[in-house]
Length: 349
Image (cartoon, rainbow, N blue to C red; front, top):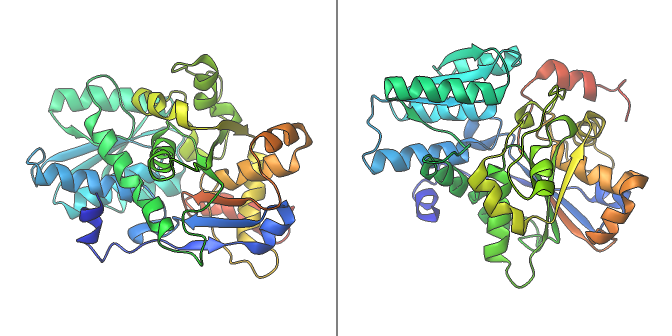
């Protein structure tokens, strides 16, 4: 994987942004955000995995230049696969839930993909996509795995680890010496990639790895409690659209369970607060335009630092005045209307 990116210097790293004023406000030593809002010309981290996977499949002769690549998505993964397919000379079909934000649908279509909306949730879109791909012999590029379909999700997760390779090499001495990392949950692909990197590269002094996900879609937390993949029910009522999942990716969950320290579920009030903290920074901190899912990792940190009900958890995770904390900003603004409504100056700080 490192050779892949080393051979492509045009695939430049994303910034690591230090936020000293916010760190002081939260009572921690240092805070840095890995800002994925402009990854390879798109506004989310997903192209790291999609491009690495698609080009690997091309090199291995598994995918031809005129193949049809398909996936299910809430927005970012679909756009990444569409861009990777277009660059590879392939066709692309993306399956989405019926209530996907129009801006996300339009962004995927702008990459030349055909977008199919289905009744139901993201998980329903996955099932319909799988059925149609089997009938038509299309190649699925999914970050969600299932029995018999595991290699491509693993390639995608391997691509994601590039993010922490970059962190190691950048950032005013921050490097990889963080004490805790907050990561978006979802189906578990990004979380597994980040936790696996930490477990491999920081064996002697591993950082705390904390997953953040919406309360209404906390499938990782439910699965961790059950010690096996579990499905959440009820309305997926959250603005964190990229994390609206009822089910985990089983192989990712199996790998991450022993190496993730905490699973925190947050209401939208915390992702809203995180979007504002990024978009209207205190002191001289740089501004970051992050969408609701992109801000969820910081939302988890804000909850641990400010919610009195979580103070015991903060102590157990060792978040104190000297702590160095890394948060992943997994996406930029994918729903501009929602972002403006939460970050404009007259919204609550």
